[in-house]
Image (tube, rainbow, N blue to C red; front, side):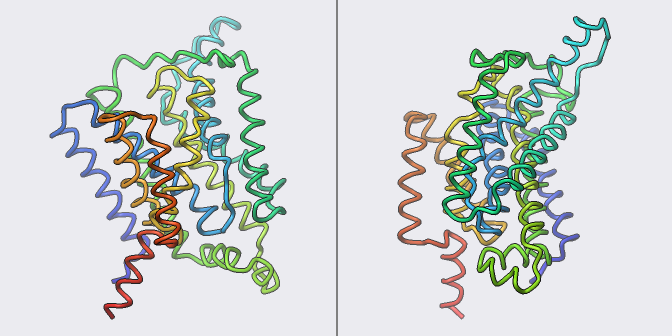
Length: 328
């Protein structure tokens, strides 16, 4: 049964609302919210990556740069009231976290647009290397930016009271659930639209798509900007989650590796693939962190990635689709 985009948005918003309300009413252990936040964060990151890497076919290793840009945008806005008061004796109310999330999305979206304009004429491995180099450039700038602590990092004090009641980590969990709902809804809407068909044509054969009249550069720029914006929005709450932001935490290799591995494992050509991969891999990593060691997380990713590339190159969604075709 095909579900219209408007009905899908209603359903996914309802599911997200029920999920948040039910968890708040039934779960009191704060670790659930810490772990759940990370899994939801990866849903946003992997879905954002898939808009460019899965739908368009351009492998992006710059996840860390867009994610960190969102985190440091929030850190700047967090310090802004104190800076204005100290420098100009201007009193300013603290910036709400939702505003920081929107600002992080705008900054990272503009970065994505600029990066895309400079690099999207490259293809294949050359584009991937360019995005990796972009991450190194952004990290170097952050390390040498004293206003946000540079290489020393910066402490972020969470507000005493959460706007929605309960603990602040529950508030962060709720916001990340909202971001996950929005990112999945956007991905599914793209997949069922003419814009999504244009991205798929670029992935399958860009030269043929361009010869057929598809505005390939414009579509790639939109895809890059949208992907970067969602990554930046996912990164904006990070300072309040870790309470100490430094380049090592914001440019963590795990973000880049997981954002690629999760869509590959789940399936890159469908909106549900990154969600499945994020829940599966993110849950395994959280269990490994508690029971064994967080040092095994990247090893787990590597092993699963190799297995799926060899056994199921189209991911879990591809396996299910192949099974359904055989049953039919």
